[in-house]
Amino acid sequence: MTRVVEVPAHFDDRAFDQFARSYGADGTGRVLFDAHAAQWASPYGLLGLLTAGQALAELGTERPLLTLPQEREVVHYWARAGFVRHAEQYFELHGKAPRIAARAESDVLLEITPVRGADDVHNVVNHIQERATAILTQELGLEAAATMGFGMALSEACQNIVEHAGTGGWVAVQTYSWRRRLRRRVVTIAVSDAGVGFRRSLEATQAKRFGDRWSDAAALEAALIQGVSRFRDPGRGQGLAGIRRYLNRWTGKLAVRSGTARMTMVPAWDDDVPLADQLPYFPGTQVLMIVPAVTEIE
Image 1 (cartoon, rainbow, N blue to C red):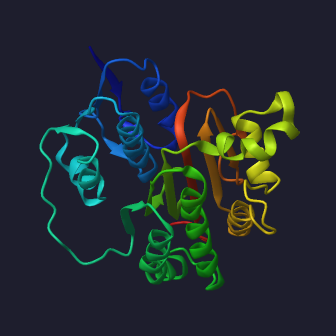
Image 2 (image 1 turned 45 degrees about the horizontal axis):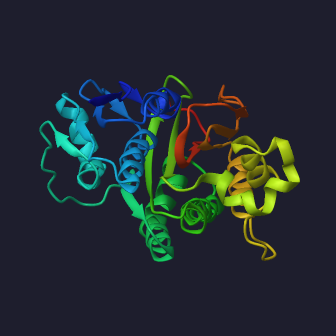
Image 3 (image 1 turned 120 degrees about the horizontal axis):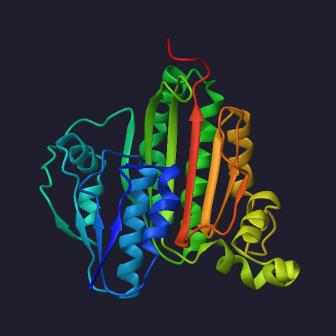
């Protein structure tokens, strides 16, 4: 029997828990991911969908099905963002997938890029650093110093996959004009993997200290607030702390979801909650970083 997982019509971080609930409702049968009615998806949503397919593949289940969006503009964006090309590894695709001609690099998009090892992290940062400098200084009005911190934040988020996930993951970067929500241009970084998650990664060194409190939420607290790491080397575990400091300086947002919990550094312009626990389980870790422009859109 085929189990249907509905892909939200507007698939971003705010709709992710809805997707995770549908994804994990029943672990039996072949899975059909139904995205035919999708109208929009952020990089965070697209990476979540890829991660779901990757997780099923690594479990050795029957190859899942995926119905692509019916709207031409939507499926074209999915293809242009690199989603369709990577999805072919994990899904049996249904629907018309457009052919995307080679084009000059865009200043506003790092298409979905796999992260499998340290060399991938290095290549991702080098690939986007020059374009990120132009975006952050010219479009967002940030100081030139912000560009170095941006590269650091991107590198650390990707490096977390290499060091902790136990499997590969994905990264994508996009700029938007948030006219209704913030009236500013923003840059978003989305990173996702289908790995072991923070709880299992830190269990050997931290579970005893937390005792009965040990959970996905406690693991996120240890990593994000206390800066602990599964590595005992001095100075390890400071990557997420560095990301927090960078985003705090530029009034940005950081949200990290792992297992059944999500911890968020909430800026004044956002209405998210600092900690959400007992969420629908989803494999691995998902990271969202948002850097807003200094001034409002005219």
